[in-house]
Length: 235
Ligand code: HEM
Image 1 (spheres, rainbow, N blue to C red):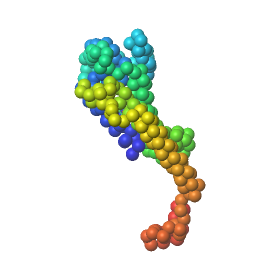
Image 2: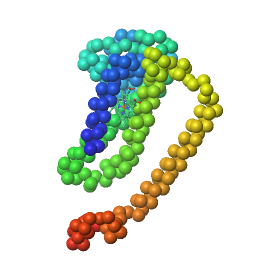
Image 3: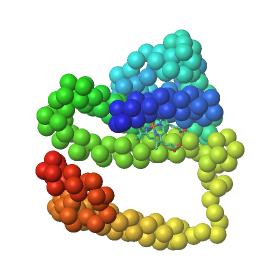
Image 4: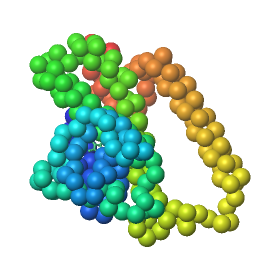
């Protein structure tokens, strides 16, 4: 399931990228730090954007962004210079990093789950303790990718709330004060922190308790109890 979901994520991400190429071109340009007005688009594996010099330092696959967007390695992609400065995101390097980290996590999850699938096919998955250990920690990766994807999507769309129509500065509510925003933000953080601590406490309790004995459980069907009594139960 994990392997299927991880590979499906790549296709869904790819189709999102094509959508933003068509409808939010400044966001796509920011994702790759692509400044040149009508240059062929390269796809960076990693790097950083020098916003002063308006160039990217890193390792890229030449023309790959053009290929993924237009099925053509030579087709130009509108860069950030195509658009007025007031209409582009200011924090290009931030968006570049969040986007590339999200994609890197996506690729790592594809690699890990396909590797696990291979070991599973060979009947040796549960002998690979090192992989099991990585998977225990890897639970956090999709959560991180979710946050990073969200940052990329929201910050990459700036200065717009509705692309090309409503600026973030015009979308601010005049009746909500900064103090009220702080108050609700702190309150939300506290409530979620409390829920997180509770989650860890209950999860830990459940893990320490271990699986329940069949006798303890009342609503078990009669045939399961007979099966357990026959001595064949995995417990
Ligand atoms: C495998 C490679 C991946 C690619 C190519 C990819 C591509 C994209 C693109 C292009 C966007 C921007 C969409 C937009 O602004 O409309 C995006 C946003 C997002 N991605 Fe990824 N992504 C990948 C992996 C992941 C993974 C592994 C996760 C989480 C498990 C993830 C979660 C998100 C989220 C939550 C958003 C924000 C969506 C929104 O706010 O509309 N992505 N991704």
